[in-house]
Length: 171
Image 1 (spheres, rainbow, N blue to C red):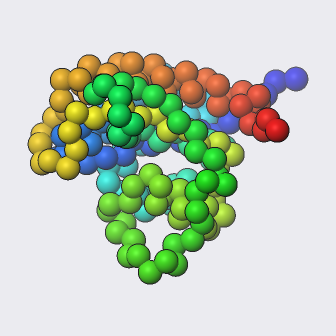
Image 2 (tube, rainbow, N blue to C red):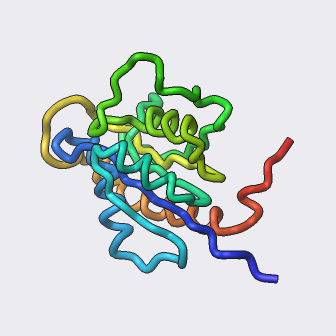
């Protein structure tokens, strides 16, 4: 019996005008040029977090977020994180304004969880930045050098997410 085609969204996020923050978009652009398995959609959401949240609510089996993330590693280090939905606080009614153009991954996931749109699996493929928060065009040398590796890591994650075994919860 063949496995059904999983619907997987790969979302590059970040601001290309903020140096290394443009990493997610650069990875998405490279992935858009590749032949991808059936059921895989790739978008560069830039800073459009609300757009990402609405797209996720269309009913994907899995979401792969591509972004920068400070973990204290050497700049250019690519890593994979899998947030547990239980660890993401639900709720968007805490009084904090939601800026639809500046939603970070945690806020997007809070929003999606609150409205009941959490996909079956969420994976974050991230890169340790050299610098963040500074207006700059283009990626640092270390992060630029991690783009091809990040593309391969995303493709590995997509391959795994296409299998039923990826959705079996271990107790």
